[in-house]
Image (tube, rainbow, N blue to C red; front, side):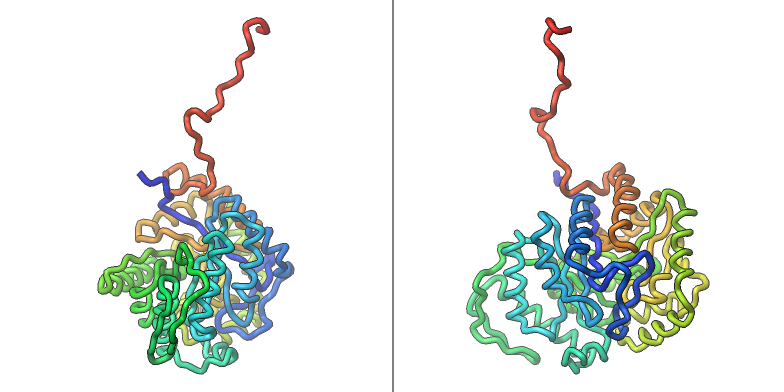
Length: 390
C-alpha cells in the first residue's frame, strides 16, 4: 500500500517583493508596479523556501514576467539552500530555444537531485510578449507551445533528434546529459487551446480559484481532451490563503488588507488588467468587476486579491477548520495539488501549515513528506534503572 499523501501542497516565492499587504503586479500590468516592503533578496526568498520545506510543502511556484526576477536563475540559487524542496519554475515557450530549455532543465535536475517542476506559461498579455520580442497571437502561442514541448520531451529521452514543424526546426540535437527523471510539466489556461496542449504533454493542469461550477467544467474539459490521447492528467489549483484560529480573525485580516487599497489604485490596476487576452484573467476580473462589494464569491472564497494583483486573484478565507473543509471539497472534485500563497509569504506559510495541515493529517489526507518513519526495532523503550538503583 502506498504511503504517499492524497494531497500535496506547494507554496510561492514572491520574486517581486513581499509585504504585510497585497503586493500589486502580475499578469497584464506594466513593469515597475510590483514590489513590497521586503525586497526579493536571495536571503529572504531562501528563508521562505527553507521554512516551507520544514513545514511540509513539497515545493514552491516561482512566477515569470517583466514584473519579477527570472525564475530559473533565482531557483537555481535557492536549490543550494534547500534539500528536498522542489521548484515549480515558470517557463514561456517562444522566448527561448526548445533545445536550450531542455538542456537547462536537464542541468537543473542533475544538480538539484531531481527537484525541478516546469510550469508552462503560454502568455496572454500582448504588450508584455512584444516587450520580449514575441509578436505572435494567442492561437499561435498555443500551437507553438505544442511543438516546443514535443521537442523538449523528445530531447529528454533520445539522442540525435530532428524535428521540422511550423515554428521550429531542429537538426540532430543531443543534450550533454539527459535527466534521469524528466521534470513533471504543469500548465494553466482557460482558453480552448489549453486542452490539446495539456492532453499531449502536461502532467498537472492548474486552475485558478473560481466558483465550483467553473472548476467542474474545466476539469471535465481537460479530461475530455486527455481521453483522446490516452494520457492521465492530474489537477491542481492556485490560491491565496488567509487562515486563522477563528473565522472572525481570518475575515478581519481580509478586511485589513482591503482597507489598505486606495480606490485610485484599484481603478488603475483594473485598467491595466483589462488589456489581457488571457481567458483566465478575464474570468478573474469578472468575479468582482473592480468593486469592493460582495467579494466572497462563494463560502470561504474571497476575490479581494484580484483587485490589485494580476493572475490568481482569489483566496481561501476562514478558520483552520473551514479552510480544511474547503480543501476537502476541492479534493472531491479531483484536485490533488494546491499551490498556495499569502502575505507576508513567510508568516502565512506558518499559519496554514500549523493550522490546517494537522486537520487534514488527522483525516488521512496529508502527511508530512519528511516525517520520520521508524521500524519497530528503532522505537525507543523508556529507560528503566537497574534494580540496585531503584
